[in-house]
Amino acid sequence: MKTLFLAVLMAGAATGALAADLPTHKGAPMAPVYSAPPPFTWGGLYLGVNGGFGFADLNDTNFANPNGGLVGGTLGYNWQMGQIVFGAEADFDFGFMKANNTFANGVTSYQTNWMTTERLRLGYAVDRALFYVTGGYAGVSTQASIADNVTPFAGTQNGWRSGGVVGAGIEYAFTNNISAKGEFLWAPMEDKTYWSGTPDQETNHLSMSLARIGLNYKF
Image (cartoon, rainbow, N blue to C red; front, side, top):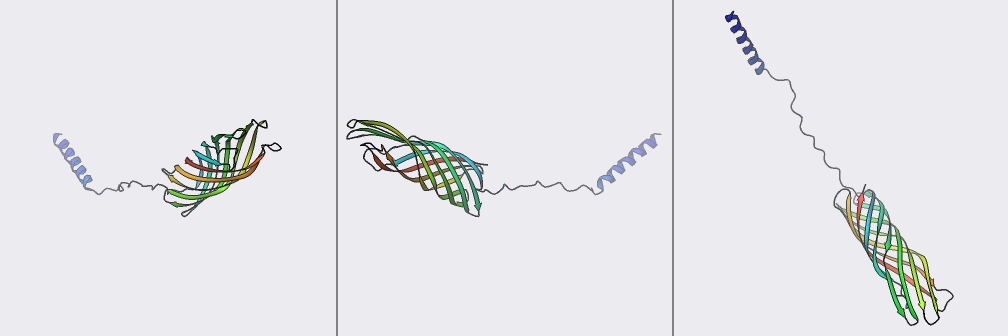
């Protein structure tokens, strides 16, 4: 009996050794799959915030030239073909440009409130940097006041002034979704007449120079 048991153990060991020497039919392990990140593009919808400083020129004697800060939001869309980027952008800002002035007969004040621009942009992309020019429509809500101690006449006149806007800027994308920009815009507005029918009646010109920075998120 003991002899039979030893024979079985030896046969099992020999069979296991033979099986270990046989070639395996398992496939080679799969190599890790590498997926390259999608190439960066300026194309797509974006939202942003902007802020900066504005200087206005009224080109007359009874009002001083207002200046001050501005802050607001931006909405835009870009299309890219090769290195050429074409887009449309709109912004809506609250302006803090204001100036008081003392003239021969009394005092005046002039300020801007809400302003907007709707523009086209044409740019040239160098990887993640975009150099662009822009132009379109600009409009601004204004408030003018006067107190004439000689006439005497006092009044406040609100109005919306429309015009054009042109400018240029640089935008840089830090990630595929987040970019920052700096731009300069010049907006000559339509003439407007104040205090019509009074001795203080005057028509003035208005042009605005805006230096802004912005931060955008592209979807």
